[in-house]
Amino acid sequence: MPLVVISPAKTLNYDAPLPRGVPAATTPRFLASDTRELLATARTLDARAIKSLMGVSDAIAALNAERFASWDDAPARSCAFAFDGPAFRALDAFSLDASAAERLQSRVRVLSGAYGLLRPLDEVRPHRMEMGTKLETRRGKDLYAFWGDRVAEAIAEDVAALPEKERFVVNCASQEYWRAARETHLAERLGVRVVTCAFPGPAVHAKSARGAMARHVAEGAETMEDLARFRGRRGEWRVDDEQSDEKTLVFRRVEEASAKPRAGAKKRDASAEPRAGAKKRDDARTPAPRKRIRKTSA
Image 1 (cartoon, rainbow, N blue to C red):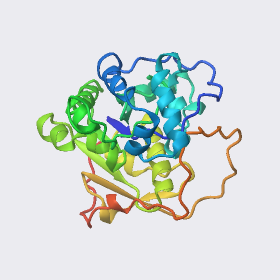
Image 2 (cartoon, one colour):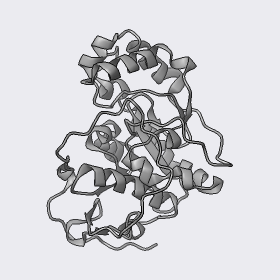
Image 3 (cartoon, rainbow, N blue to C red):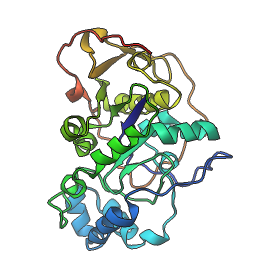
C-alpha cells in the first residue's frame, strides 16, 4: 500500500465553503517546535529582505511580512482545502465525503517549507515559504539544512504505519520539494522503497497529474499495477511501459477528452505570481529509456 507525497501550492484559498461533514482539522507534527522556530527567524525579516530572499514582487513581500507578523491571529484551515494550485484542484478534496477524506489523511503527504511534512487535514495558516528558500537559521544556510533528516524520518514513520501490504512511497513532488525528502537516506538508511511518477511536458499538466495521482492512491490504488492504470481526471494520461520500471513510472499525455469547466471555480489568492508567457516544461524528471515494468502480485 503506497503513501503518495506531493508538493504544496503557492496559491491559497481560505474563502470557499468547506464541504459538509468534513473531518476536523489536525495539528501538524512539527508545528510546536520546528515551525515555530522557523517563524521566529522569518519575523526578523522586513518586506525588503523578503523580496530579496524569495524573489517576489513588492506587494507579495509586504503581504508575507504582514503574514509572519500576525501569524497567530490569521485564519487557518486544513491544507487540502487551503492550497489551490493545479495539483490541489485535481486532487479536489472538496468533492470527497467524510470517509474518503479520512482515507486521504492516511495515504497522502504534502511537503512544506514552513511545516516540513503535512497530512491533508493538518491545519495551516496563510504563508509563502518555498522549500528552496535560502533562509539562514542556526541549523544552516537554507530550508534543506533546517529540516535535515526530519522529513525523511517522518515519511518512513508514516509508511511503517500502513497496513502490511506492499508498502512504498510514491514520489509525485517537484524536484525542489522532493530534495527535502532525502531519497538516499529514505531508501538506503530507512529502508523505504520509493517509486517516482514522471509526467513530462508542460508544468501545469504535470502538476494536475500529480494531484490526480494522489487522489487515485487515496481512492484505493495499492500496487504498482494499480498505479500504472492511472488515467487522470479526464482520461488523458497513459503509462509508457518502455520508459517505466520498478522505480519509475513515466506517463504520457494523450489528447484530452472534452470536458466542461467545473462550476464554482475557487478564488485565487493575491500572493500567487502571474505566470510568464511561455509555458514551463517538466522534462527534467524524464528518465532515460528503461526496461518494461515488472508485474507484481496484488
